[in-house]
Image 1 (cartoon, rainbow, N blue to C red):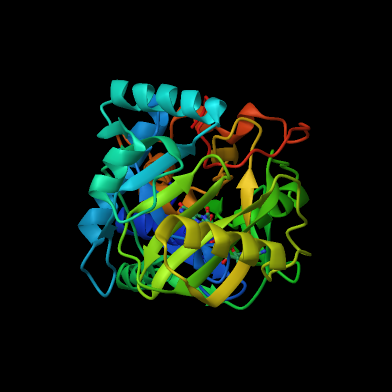
Image 2: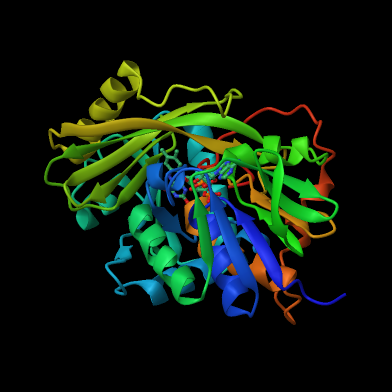
Length: 377
Ligand SMILES: Cc1cc2nc3c(=O)[nH]c(=O)nc-3n(C[C@H](O)[C@H](O)[C@H](O)COP(=O)(O)OP(=O)(O)OC[C@H]3O[C@@H](n4cnc5c(N)ncnc54)[C@H](O)[C@@H]3O)c2cc1C
């Protein structure tokens, strides 16, 4: 079969924009459909943390590709990747987290990651963070953060340069046979392929077209506080919270609710308990006293095996969703891989492990957060 020439992408988040750009530069005519504004979905709410601290082959190869690309983009059009080590730690008394951390670091090292374990004292020698409660920490050197909104702006520009058409302002539905996009039930134009990169809305869009996928949204929260913090990104495995430096001080998050959320009806404001607990965690770890500038909630997408759903669900209908909180850092790689698969580029395709058809779409499964130190981290 010939590579599709006319491609519709639904969703202008980090993933949709990257796929759109990459298929357009490979020669396709591309239209992006976005109901709100580019980046207005979860990309605009992301913390922007990136790292390669993975312990499985497949994750490592995606992360390698993503980190190389994100660095190559840094410095262009206001987009900056801030090199910042990623510290993940277990506190005194949390033996389960300590052994999970040891195992995870060992497996990361087997996969050639630049990751080491350090004691609390060693951590204190290197970074300006409090460590007297740290039993053991891992330090991943190949890590950093970027502003997801700047990534969106960069890729909107790159898409426009590559001739991508944007249709913004309508919530669309999709058709499978033949592939198409409809606004108010009226099919817009003929496409050879449709890519659904609608984040947590992808399940409903595809289910309505007859292709259910195994995706569950779950709610997470974050805040930005003004203070003077110049340390690393820190993930505390004992209380499952994270923080990273931010231009005004610190960005902190946790608040994972491991229950399914309704993508059309959820609370976008941060909970009081989350703000209180996050501030406590930041004060404790950074020994600063941040003033909250902004706090918010968002949704991430879970799958039964914590791998994303990327690839064809039917002839000419593709999905890219289910990132478990890693969709921003993986977008530069997954966009390229999916574009390669769609355009049938030699040697560039999505790993089989991410095939969305590995699930029927009606599985019952428990939501597990993405940033953990257990066997699949
Ligand atoms: C608080 C928080 C912190 C996070 N931190 C990180 C992090 O540090 N690192 C990381 O890698 N990831 C992080 N994530 C996860 C990350 O935000 C997502 O994985 C990523 O943004 C997914 O991008 P996307 O393009 O798939 O989806 P989205 O950015 O949600 O884009 C989907 C787009 O589709 C549009 N859309 C939906 N339905 C329709 C329709 N019917 N018609 C037209 N358009 C439609 C939406 O408006 C939206 O713009 C975080 C998420 C949250 C909420």
